[in-house]
Image (cartoon, rainbow, N blue to C red):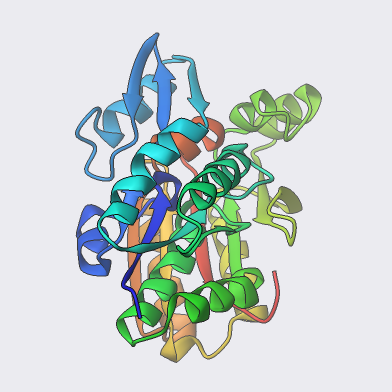
Length: 290
């Protein structure tokens, strides 16, 4: 059977070390801040994560861009010419047009290479939730799963990747249309922190509200306690918007309460961070349902 490669995008928020260990290709997505264009590399080579978040704190405006069809073709085709098939695991289609662009690229390449296997799979996930799905897919490949089996595993299990997160500044959500201006002003005055998740359609949804930072972090743990599958056997992911101390507080409580096998932590990259803002903390794990 022909060898294959797993490709994803930088919204997985995986560390460069993890990318190397998993032997995957990660496409850096584009963003613009303070009128300068950058690529969201896992190692922060274009701009460090801390510098990016400090610019947001200084009220600099940041915007993001999808991966267009031609860029996908340019990235996919060399693997095909190297006699490799492709499975691309994509950022949620409810949050970006990237998946649609990838599907057009796949169809274009299949017309040129009709005997090849090229799949684009909508993760319905974001940040290290998407990263956790890719992490498991890569391990399945290492275990000898075929490209069909990995594709089907991702499709069958993507809605078991639970995303729970809270933000520190409601105004970033307001700019993204996730909360109203009134809710942002009142919530900030009363120190109301939304508890959100990514739903079965891959959309961000407010599920609950907590009064104060610690309460919102504890709410993430509570959500995990309600749905997590065999936590002692799981590697779970935590990502953060330049607030390591809060992420470590959550990790400590998760370890104490659920005795998970391992916790991997990283920054929320600039593409997701543009919309979530500094102070975001997110928790990802395999659960019974989202």
